[in-house]
Length: 112
Image 1 (spheres, rainbow, N blue to C red):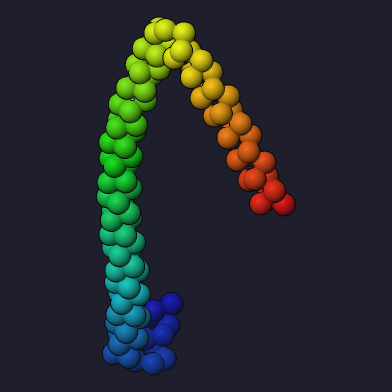
Image 2 (cartoon, rainbow, N blue to C red):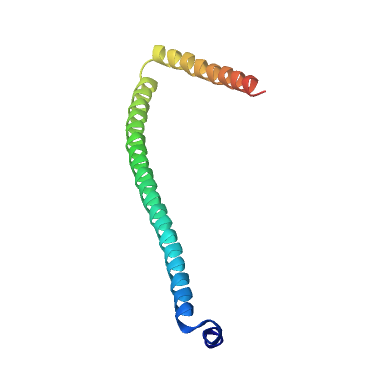
């Protein structure tokens, strides 16, 4: 094909056309590479942000575990103690169940 084009138009103009086409393709490729580089940078930054978020969640879960462990120890101590503490424990338990159902009712009414 290049030989037939050379015969009609001359050798120099075909080289110029091919050179221009190569430059256009190289610029197109450079644009795509630049876009991919930017995308890779954004992915790296997002991964770093997500890792930092997960690290913070891990420390939050550890502190919540510590709080729950302390609460369970206090609860166990209260259960093992005298009769008056058991009565208070029953009142608190019933109160918590009632608060749970009240919150459930309120949330279900808000969602309607």
